[in-house]
Length: 106
Image (cartoon, rainbow, N blue to C red; front, top):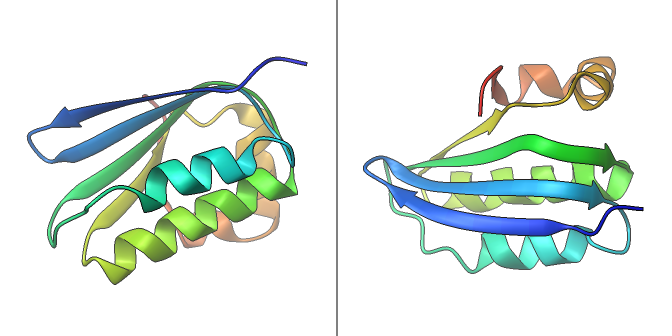
């Protein structure tokens, strides 16, 4: 089991949150709280960089959906970047590749 590490940095277009380690039922709430604490502005972009993600269960997927809801409510855009192949497969199977903008690089 890999501990979850979340870092945040501001960019000219918005915020990048990098997620590394295991995003499971034990840690998904941490990501949700971190995203919900962001004061997103209309027109900004929230990037969730998953290049360091080693595991993601359904709780992690739910945290991504909560992040999307937070961004949309603020009038901001959201992008998942650097999504690992196994997580991308799950997102595709459940149709969330049609809901999220997904970039191959972080």
